[in-house]
Image 1 (cartoon, rainbow, N blue to C red):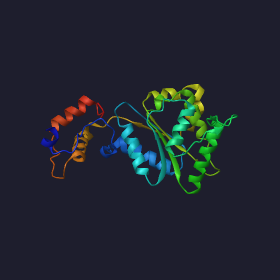
Image 2: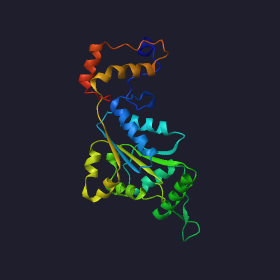
Image 3: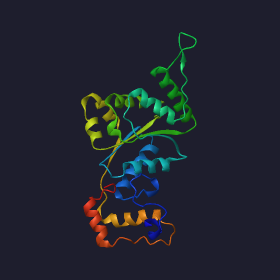
Image 4: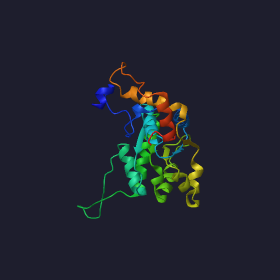
Length: 247
């Protein structure tokens, strides 16, 4: 009834992150521009930090969508795992098949060692580099990465040729990520991050256009009325939400 009444295909204000609803307000566009320029310049380690609900996941998906056909991409939405598991997840994202090695007994197979996994990953990355393809690895909710796994990411960033990085990493997380990166035991990782951007709340003046954008994206047709919110109502939403779309 709700959708029919407003001539909508789907709920326009669902909290599910969908790149179709990406709204390029000043902060989001600045963050996306930074990521695209840095990645296209070959930078190895990038970071986006923002509060809960400010649109980091939607930004990440928009980045992956923009890079489609231009780069090989890998995406991990839940990085709360050990170094070996994260490495395996990355390899799975890149379509790398990992075969168990033969054990001492003919019938027994063993998991590959980390050394073997890294060699297999490096071979794959070299093949992409030789074909002129950059490989971008995006990690969402990066504040959840254990310290040991963060250190393993630093080591992954060492994969390079004389001219370029074989793997470019993008971390997206809540402010707790900065707290974690400031710890002295992983200070070397912080030094590797060449570009960083803060994704903050939307400016109040941008909220009315954001509401129209969401309604237009969900509309059945161009004839759907997207001027649903009166100016006073839009400004009240901006004030009560603090400009955070996810609140």
